[in-house]
Structures are given as structure tokens and as C-alpha cells.
Length: 163
Image 1: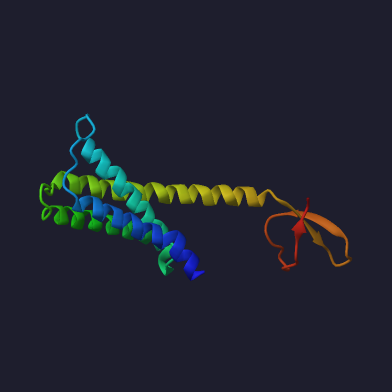
Image 2 (image 1 turned 60 degrees about the vertical axis):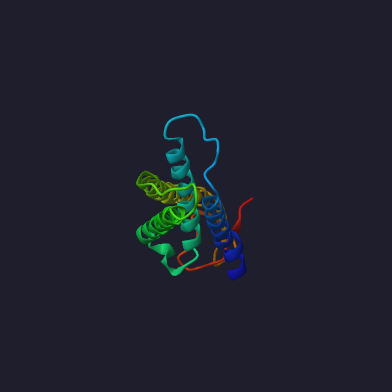
């Protein structure tokens, strides 16, 4: 289970952070998209993705049941990485740090973590609704089958799928 958590939750986060670092270590790109503030949109989207990846990774920790802490820690971690990235860029030739880039990083990190949390809550609610509509068979004390809705009986008897 730990290897699976690492491969599917932590490794993508590490790779994403390395890609951001390597891209930040290169001189400024020669061509940028042509609309105004395109680099800020780029920063916002990149750090929204980082917020999502931090959220996914932190879901493997003990804090996974504290949704507020999970969202806040994910957004703050991605934001701090964005701030450190801008500081790093200030030392790279032909690059400079920008407070507007930092702001775009922070906003993206919080929006990404928040939207992913909303998505997770929606998925969980949808899954619960589907699960509650499954009809199950229960064997009563006389060995006769009876149908019931829900997940478990009061006396804890084993159920099988009705289909």
C-alpha cells in the first residue's frame, strides 16, 4: 500500500515540482502567447495543478479526514513552492522575480486545492447515492431470503448482491 501511495500520489507531485524547477532554471522563453497577462494565467494554471497534486499526496497522511486542514495545507505548500520558485528565478540569468507571479501562484494553488476538494466531495456523495440504491439479499433466521436497502444490517449479517 505504501508503494502504491508513493507511485500514484507522491511521485507525480515530485515529478511536477522537478519540471517546474527545471523550467524556472532556464532562460526566459523567446516567444510567449500573444494576449496580455498570459504569463499570469500560465502561473495560475500550473500552480492550480500543483495544489491538486499536493492535495492528492496529503490524502495519504493521517490528516485525510480533516478536510479543512487538508485543503489549507495543500494550498499553503503549493504557494510556498511558488514563492521559492520566484526567489529561485531572481538568481537565474535573464529571469526575474515578480510579485504578480507570486500572487498568480498563490491564487492558483488555493483554487486548485479548493476545486479538487469540491470534486472529491461530489464524487463521494455520488458514490454514496449509487451504493445506497443497490438492492441486497439477506437471509433471515429461517434461511429465507429477504430484500433490503442499505449497506449493513443491525445484526451484522452477510449480504450478497441481488443481481
